[in-house]
Structure formats: C-alpha cells, structure tokens
Image (cartoon, rainbow, N blue to C red; front, side, top):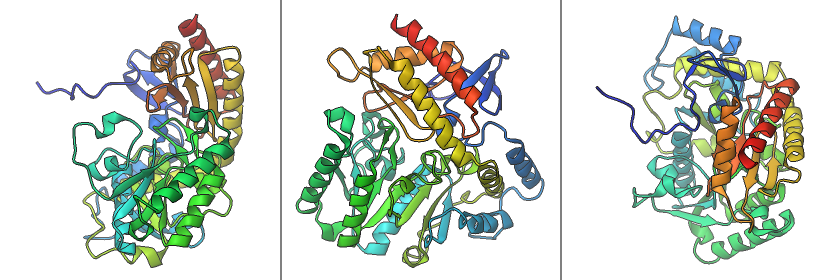
Length: 418
C-alpha cells in the first residue's frame, strides 16, 4: 500500500474535513481558527461562496483548455481584469502554476530581455523549491541542502533586517545599500546583472517588512545601471499587506516584473508574472508555456477572487485588521522577555522569539506554536532559525475574529512559557 512521503511533516496536528471562512473543521468536528490561510493562499477565506460558484460553473463548461493549443475566455478575461490592479504600464501577463514556476519565468525573462547572466537576490529571501528558485533562496538550509550544484549566475547581498543587528531601520538600510554598491563594484559587476529580485516583506526568512527606503534604493540603482527590478509578490500580493501590492508601500517604486501566486485564486493553483509589453516581448520564442498554466477553472476562481477582494474592500480590511492584530500581539508580549520583536504589515505578522542572550530561540517558538494549536489557533513558524511565529489570517477576517485569535494566543503564551 502506498503512502505519502515521510518528509511531508504537518505544521499542526489537524486533519481538515472542511473549511468555512477563517475556520477549519477537523474530522472530529472540532473548529480551528485558521491564521495560516494555507500559507497565505486562501485570501478570501475557505470556500467563499462566490469562488465556489465560479469554479463549479467552470468545471461544468471547460476544465482544461491548454493555452498554447487553444484559447479560452477565463484566461483572456483574467488577463484583462488584472489591468485594473496592476501598476500603470505593466500590461502583459504570463500565467503558470506555482510561485516557484513564476519566479523562474521572471528570471528567464530578465536574462533574455537584458542579455545579462546574473541575478542578485537578498539574504533570507524565499523564492521556491525548484532548482532555479532554490538557487535564489536563503531562508533556510533545508531548501538548498543536498541538491547542488544549483543554478549558477546568482549573487546575494544583505537584507536590511534591523532587529537582527540591533540597528535602527535607517542604519540597516544604509548598511544594506552600501554593501550592495560594493558588490556591484566587485563580485557582481553591473554589466553582468540582469535583475534584482526582492520580496516586499521577507516571508519564510522571518516576516520582516522591507523598508521603503531600501526598495527606493534598489529602484534608483536599477534605473542607473540598466538592471530590472523583480518584485516577488507571491506572498505579499492581492491585498495581503494592506495595499494591493506589497511594493506599493514604497512611494515611487514600480517594479519591472511582478511575480504573483498564492492569494491570486483562493486556493486553486495559479501564478503569473506581469511586465510591460516592451519587456515581455523580449522573451525568446518558446520560452513561455506549460501544460497546466492558465487552467480554465483556476482562472475562473481568480476572477471571482478579484471580484471579492475589490467588492468586499478586503485590501482596506487587511490594513485595518492587521493594525488591530499587531497592536494586540504587542500588548500580549508586554513583560515577556522571550519575545524579542513583534512586526507586521497588513495581515502578515511575525513574533520573534529569543533566548536570554538575545539569540534566536526556535525551541520556544515551536513550543508556543504547538500550544496555540492545542487551543484551536493554527499558526506557522518561519525564520532561518525557525524562531518566528507568523500569523496570516485570510483577508476576510473580522475584528471579532482577530480578538478571538488574540485571546487564544495569550492562552498559548501562558501555557508554553509558565
């Protein structure tokens, strides 16, 4: 009898039977407050009626219309509708299945459009598990270990992680940009660099919001040196940060290429890259494609997701409830030495655990995470050392549900740390 790979370890003990909004119900009927959202995927909550109906209707009409063989309406409509939310000038879209696949498509495009071989990523970034995406990823050794050699043509520069160094945000940005300039003058010559790739909020690396000044510094250097700026919005896009795109927190910054996935289709596998047509058309013939990319059912779900996000004002809800959640988590952290930092942007909230010497404490983070699950609050951990607990509620979360989550979080802290 076959079984799942033993490497597929669950973050929580829950075996889900069904989902509704911000809640998951297990096979015993117990209700759990889901502040994981499938790692930021179920942006409209579990089984939003509009998304369910769109998918059901599409399944009865056309399930698979392979998009380099035939064209179909959900794909064309979604490409057109994305124009409502993409930054001005970004008007060409290519669809694929996963975040990793889209990241690799963005790298392929950048290299072909510029004729340059090198991509510069930032410490702690997560861009995926496939070989090319893993080569760009430094959020944890488990992504890169034992599979080398990885894709070449990748360089890394520091990320402005102020808390880790005990600096102000301004000091961290100055350091990171100074080191970037040094690398562009030495190990990553500007004439070789096709693109910078950066997350607007460091995701698996610790839920660290990227300072606006850093993104602005990247944009300025990209313009000066003819380098493309890729915003990996896989986790931050579609309203997660309190703006539709995470990079919009940095005034004046528009990426050359945007990568999106996760919340795009409320749980259906769909990803995309978007760029100005003048850049996209520089991709070489045959370099974009895929059997399942732009699947009709996934596109129908994405259209419904977009309707819900805009129609129910979920971007603003993410901002408002995110502020409420961060404030509540900070209140709960008062007097707890094990919590070194609480940070967040929209509905991406990270709580960093440290030991008595201020060093990363993954064991305590895991203990609190497990206690939360026992109380019915589902969370995840992240960070290079696994010492950050992250909260990722669906964008439909209400103030009452945020307060419910905070009450359960407080109980988890008491149980785990007492």
